[in-house]
View 1: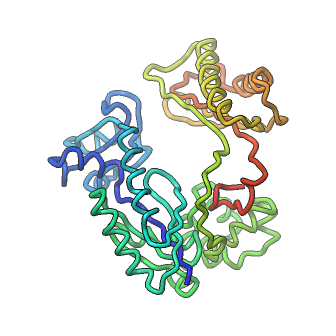
View 2: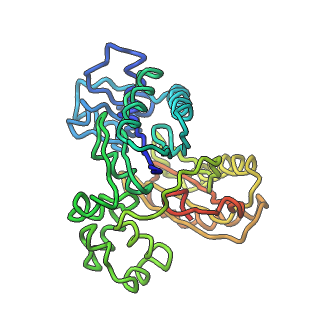
Length: 354
């Protein structure tokens, strides 16, 4: 039988740091920014020892430091994590008859034909450990969705199987927010429709869902409630939908001209990245975090264009939406690109989005 395995490296970034500094093993380790909690930065990851105090990814570093005063706080070292990730993916690709779809630094789907997926998963874990000294958890499923969700039940260092056979038993009574791809905003919109649990989502009326989320995503959310979707692990090279850059400023930007210059600087960096891909821009996004910590996101679809000046003019329309009387602590710019037609084949929200 063809199985989908989801491999998720346990506390990946923190684990890489502990490998480089074994004396940190068992200590609360927090990685973020330049490792200075007095600066504006967020937590990239935390060891399980730090997570026990409530520290999580995306938390402001200064708050994390307050929660764990004796934590070891380290700066982000992206090249080291990229190298470690590449080594792990190399191990996965070397497994017998494995098809590997990389999802990020610390996770991947592995498609494999086997009669005993648990035994295969254990061999996979051992192979990763032997080669990289990193631990991982493995979710086993008959779809990408079920395999991805299964991993959470196996953490840390475990293996868990989630299929059509036990989906209702394991997931039916759980809140919809526990589904992969359902965040706080979507769960609130579902709750407004009277949909609280995974089981309720699985049988929700199509008209209500499509009216709220549109014809594609409405039907997708119902399919998600059933754990359905693709069972195909796709190892074709990833084609990015867009590029983005963002910066947290150590001192709030209060001058309007300075804010606009900062946003345009980020846009120039993004468009340089887009130029390397050689695809036209079809949309723009602007992220603004006002002081002290209120975040707004503005988006704009634009006619397909590769003309930098046209993109710049459209971006200025977004930048004009920044509140004129509020200080800014973070700015981010994003450009969405047109997908090649052959890159759209088989795309779903779990295979690179639509």
